[in-house]
Length: 328
Image (cartoon, rainbow, N blue to C red; front, side, top):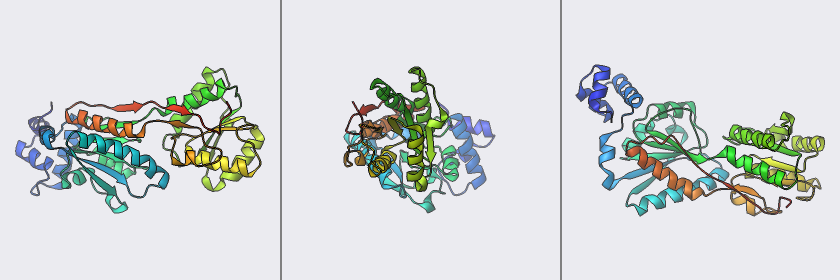
């Protein structure tokens, strides 16, 4: 395991200076502090104090206060799963709302000021400033249902296998006799659209159905009804895959409003099995997964990092939940 002495040798400064920089001492310049943290991260250093105090751990759940109701609902179960696991093992949990004015603050500072051993991050959008903050982190962090293409020993990721989830949607439709299968995505509505598109294409290809790029609609929410109706009239689909349940809810509403019979004429499947999927008529079929399990996995990942084990990405599986919006 990397030690403070290793960092000291790398930078050519004293062990004392490295220790002060990593522990937030005020008699070290900001430039030196940032350089020490940067090198510590590159070398995979994790604070010994974090690892050794496992008898009394305190974890943070950092959330985006500005996320919409749809994401708040998803996050609730993740938070509950993480919180229950922490408490069952005798640890503390602190919920921290990341407001606009806090998004520019270093996450290391937030974790240090709250005396945390590490944290999970639940945000809908990772801004450039937040990304830079993650790159400079020295404390353990697990990003949930989001992803950054960075490789850091103290940063892990927990989420859904989105590619496989969308493959299951398309395979479900194919198994039930559908060939004209469209994919509708509301722009800026889904962080994992590209992963789902890969799954959509892969499933079509494996079913010997030619992938037609014009069968994929990327639309702004404000233009949704007009473009969806034109899209459906042009393509005459029997099945529609949606980027998530919120989009699927809107598609069902448009179809109902314009006299389409669901699922007799068009079947629709959402993604996430969120609260709205069971309150609309017809009830929405969706991709479902254990959101509380995501929270539990996030806890496990955070503990792995505390033990000096880099976990990279952890993914959980999903299944199709049949309801009234699909033709069986």
